[in-house]
Length: 321
Image (cartoon, rainbow, N blue to C red; front, side):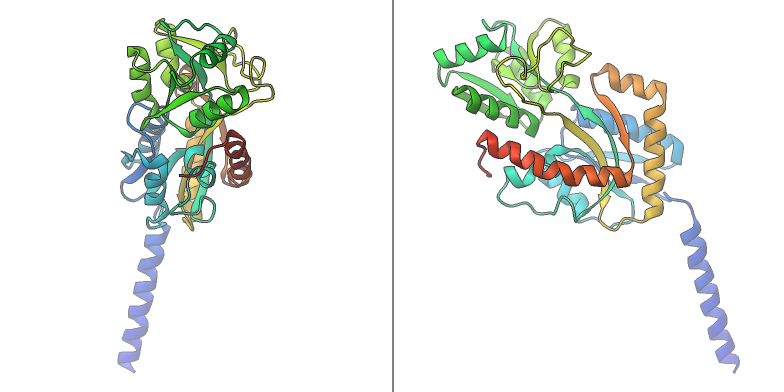
């Protein structure tokens, strides 16, 4: 009988200790935030800015880990296979969740089933840019130059948005422009400014500083309507690609089956971060559009973007690699 009472008491103590542990607020230890692009990229910049807020607000370190290359597959797969405890997160873009089935023959994860959507944080607009030494001032001139010099014009590609846009441009205009792949946009921009490549399609974060410095020329933005940051720059829609409209998005995920309480903590803090003037102003000053949506809305958005981007990739004539 005494043994039974001890066993029951021990069980109660263990159960109570587990309850205490589970009741402790998340996070209890450092959190790793994986990004699929190199340091200096717009995704990396957003991750570090938001990570600092999370660290200050939640009292634990948020370590940014860059896993560039393989079109983002390596970074996304790392998080998909991580323990779903909320301590390994992914801050990423459409590159890892919207384009993978159109771009790659073999994808090591399911972009929907293998992740827990936490929050969408914004959009990354882009524009077509050329080196200032190129004799090209408009999209019409770019197309004419490409047609007169088949295979002699090239463009740098540091992300999926650039590739989809560039290949769609080639197909719609019947031009032969050579694609030059890079691990991320900052590397391509370095070569554009140096004149090693004549053209690229950078995001605003990467391109605006060089545009303001007079080192590159903007020919068109990718969205259907003009961007208020570059009001005098026309769109592809109104120049050589009627109806074209593309906009990269950014958001945070965890592995599938992440604890709901951890999802709520991160989502709530992300919303607070994006509402802070000092954070919002820094993000928008770099051309990034702040747009928050919580777990449910973000989940629906990600599911809708997958077939949309897959269709755009097919239209561009891109074959999965």
